[in-house]
Structure formats: C-alpha cells, structure tokens
Amino acid sequence: MKKLRKMLRQKEFYIFLACFFANLFNWPFLAVPENYGPSGLFIYLLLVWAIMIALLFFISRSFSENIKGERKKGGEADADV
Image 1: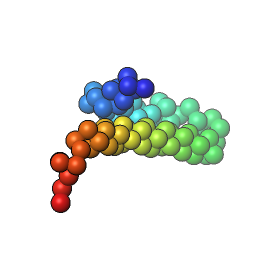
Image 2: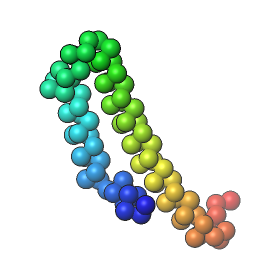
Image 3: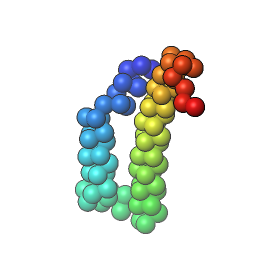
Image 4: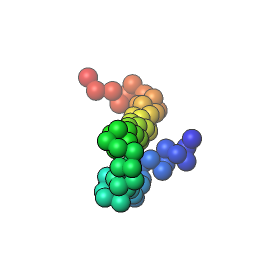
C-alpha cells in the first residue's frame, strides 16, 4: 500500500495520467466504439471519465492520509488557536 501511495504522489505519474487520458479522448480510440453505434461511444466516454475521476479521488485520498498522519505526529503543541 505504501508503494501505491508513493506512486500516486509523484509528479511524473500526473504527467503520465494527463497524456494517457488525453490520448483516450482522441481520434484513434474514439473510432473503436463507433462500431457499436452511439450507445457504444457514450458508454466508452462514460467509462473513461469514471476511471479518471476515480484515480483523482485516490490521489486526493493519498494526500489527505498524509496530512492526517502529520497532525497525529505533531501533537497538540502545533495546533492553531
């Protein structure tokens, strides 16, 4: 699990995700579901969008767990009043 959190926090991973999902929304990949009609294209776009949102959610959770861990280590002396 720590390896996954470490990977989700790397800037290179964000660049890879941006390029990967940008390619999934371009012509060669959008031509594949056209064989199944408009519903195939709609399902493809919905799935890619849902996967992208899920990855962004997991990235945000990896950072929020880091912040919670730092607060527990800091104790009450570092608390804002």
